[in-house]
Amino acid sequence: MSTPPITPPAVPAVQTQALSRAYGEMKALEALDLVVNRGDLFGFIGSNGAGKTTTLRILATFLPPSAGSAFVLGHNVVSSVNEVRRLIGYMPDFFGVYKEMEVTEYLDFFGACYRIPSSKRDKTVADVLELVGLTEKRGALIGALSRGMQQRLGLARVLIHDPQLLLLDEPASGLDPRARIEMMAVLQELQRMGKTIIISSHILSELQSLCNRVAIIERGRLIYAGPTQGIRSQMEQGFAFLIAVSGDVPAALEICRRQPETLSASLRDDGRIQVRLSGDTPDPSGLAAALVGGGLRLTGLREEEVGLEEVFMRVTRGETQ
Image 1 (cartoon, rainbow, N blue to C red):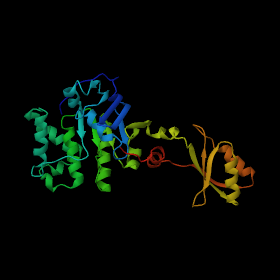
Image 2 (image 1 turned 90 degrees about the horizontal axis):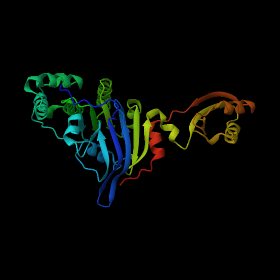
Image 3 (image 1 turned 135 degrees about the horizontal axis):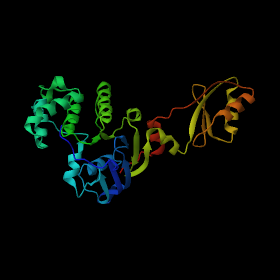
Image 4 (image 1 turned 120 degrees about the vertical axis):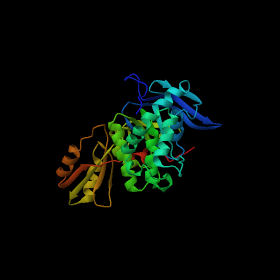
């Protein structure tokens, strides 16, 4: 593959400052401040109309911002368009393919567009096909490929010039479960190879295990950006614990509610008590001691796993532009 321009290691992969985009009176993006570090597999989360695609299109130099600035590996997306395009691979949520072309013809065409010498294109095409798991389909017509294989071919296309940053807008859209898993495995391999990846998706459970950092956006405004595992500390609702007792459950519920660190306590359908505690690092030992001191036998106490889907539903209102 061709060697992309070298950029200083201290420069973030992406940095936006008060980035905004308006369509007439409608604000699609409003004062977005975002930093994506080199090597991140970064999840971009938001409802339809939240501003995800607008952000990715600005970073890909296809849409100028109305205000603010955006930099890709130190290059301004407005004043250094050619430099940015050499560094990125952009895969929109819907892209056209030439269904009557063979897989290798399709990739060779785009390799020529990126001015990869003809003497190197065969190996480059073979390398990207192997990377996305399509080597056996090299001679197939694109129209005969499944939806999942066409998505992987689209990913191979954006990899043809060996970009440092991948901008992937809903790459798993419309895929069946197996094809989604295969796509996510490819993205993990690309991260291990040193690529920086920004992926927008509605499949939040997969982003939770896939991404090391995420951002949540709603109505063009950034709600959260940071480590995937640190998102709960940003929630006002606190940390949740599930408690199981043997004996008088209503009495146990009342004891839980009386504790000073308790934000809320409720009885679940399975008979366990869900308790939310205040603080960044809550300690449930006082709660356990209170229950035992009240004559109850504690049979279970564990922290409740809060997934990205639940966090997303709590911190957003479902509002679109």
